[in-house]
Length: 463
Image (cartoon, rainbow, N blue to C red):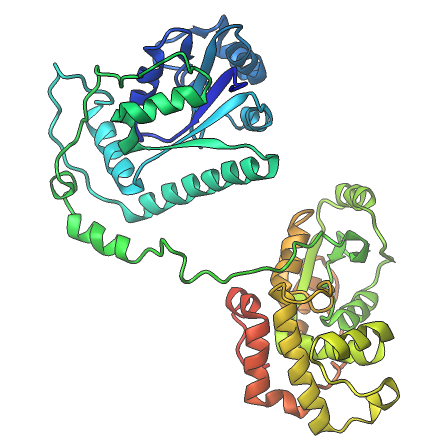
């Protein structure tokens, strides 16, 4: 037996939610209160209160209205909720396990065209005694894609919350709404097993049953634009890399100018930047906590924050040299035993010639590819994590003002010094890299390991 005492219909404009609401409201002890959390109206146009709560009171405390709707004794009450409705109630809706989640969807192109027609004609509902207003819309590809992205992001958020909380939803498509067997199943799922058959509402009829070519004036243009979309995400770069935190303790602050905040990427040219910070002047500080860094940010409103990217192949080489000389012996042994990296015994690591280094480095690059794809048991260490994910971790606390590149670092840091009113300082010479990094196969192996970085930041194959 269902334990639901309320429901929410997650839908969007022109998905059939009015028809579903009418079907529910025809049943005794079931009430759907429209778009109760639409910022521009209260439930329906012209309504001044729902369950004794006015629009002004809802704006001051939306949870008051949510409680008034969902806590009625011996009554199943609910509402429709779209992606652009009051976000302050979303978490409370999802946390309420006694609130049934109904998800209503429709072909997004049909919804878009129907919505544009409704805006154009101001005809949002149609009964059998009314005449539809003939109209055609002009398809706007940019507007459609923006709306689609917003709706898909919201649906993804709903799905994620359902999965992580262990809840199930009742999924409906627009075409299901006139199927009495489906409507009966919905009400039985909601707990109304006393109902033998649920008929669909008969006071509304389809508004635009014409072919799409009659409803869209630039149909061929629309078809061409939609063909360029990627509904199956064939171009998506899959990622199985774990999310990273902001790494605040690694951040370095100085008092130079209005304040400088360096957000280092492990394996990048941090030594060069720290030497530059010392040359620019000002007391440097590190080992921040999030609270201490927030206090520093408040005291330095004119600060500049920055990070520096390094070419993935060079950065992988730094991770490799760290593995040889600075990593625990147990990590090297794990790579030998379980991860197909044929490292020589520790005592012979620094007697390797260039050819042997290149061969083992190629094996290490293949290990990095598998590591970032979640195919090994070892955790992804910060020194070889993708720079894309490292910067994503930064953004969970603070976005850097500037993302600089190692290959133009002297120019970029000179500009940064000028921006904070400090004289430019000379950069020390960078550490040389071995010539064999110009090998085409190594470059391709690095691209395979760090595909996200190459695509997101536009790195060339050759450092």
